[in-house]
Image (cartoon, chains in turn brown, green, orange):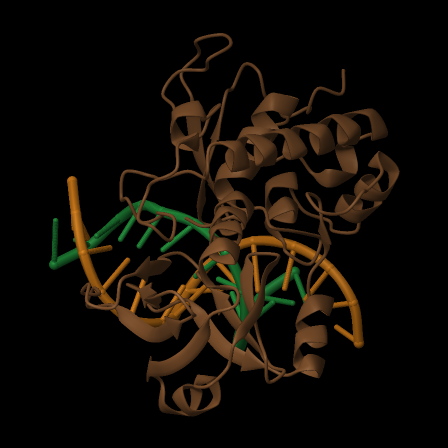
Amino acid sequence: MPELPEVHTITEDLKDEIIGYKIYKAAGDKYMRLLLTGNTITNVSRLAKNILIKLSSGPTLRIHLAMTGRIFIKNEEEPQDKWTRLILYLVNREKKKKLIFSDMRMFGKIELLQEKDLNKLKNKYGADIFEEEITPQQFLELIKSKNSNIKTVLLDQKIVSGLGNIYVTDALFLSGIHPETKTKHINLKLAGKLLENIKKVLKEGIKHRGATLPDKMYVDPLGNPGNYQNFFKIYMREKCPVCNSKVQNVKIGGRSSFFCPACQKLSGGLF
DNA sequence: ATGTTTGTTCCGAT
DNA sequence: CATCGGAACAAACA
């Protein structure tokens, strides 16, 4: 499911594929059709897990993939799947193509934002660890601002943005932190270690172009799966790669939380 | 068939 | 009033 590395991969691919193209036709939501047609795409960027497509007339098309949203770039005559919600028909001097937004479970968001709405959206998100320099002290303050377990806090987009279940699970494993550890029990040294490991797994995720689970829901705009699933540290694994213990899976906030009972003690490596 | 799945939002309880 | 935990959301699959 799209987290920061997957959304980053899609965004970078889209920069090459659609910047400079003009939307000569749009299909889907009626209100959007009218507003989108005639615009040239001037930029594509990422905000947390959102893809932002900047239009020449001013507004920004915001796409949030949620769990099953996908973006495809196809030739005009290629078919789209039955979950398609929006199609942008694009043209430049050389060729025509189309951008398809498909969302099987309809949890994704697609909307046009004016400048002030975009700023409002930006204010909803905490630091983007991948884009912004953040010190261990700042990171520790952020996570301690919530009186909850570290897993839940890291998934809170208002605290730090871009992380989802997979990368949080792997980063906690690399740091030797039990996912149910209360943030108040984390000290500066451990926070620094966690921060480094979060950056590490995000970078690795990006390097492997994201993670595609057995459901095959995540693919890049050209339909290719990612490879990070072949490098999972503890996520979906049966045995701990370090000590060979049987991996445990507890539900935290309704989400699978894989951890090694030997390497990730509840004390959180404090002792 | 019922349970599970993921990101986000919203609602009720503390 | 602020904060936190859990339900709900849609659809497919086992």
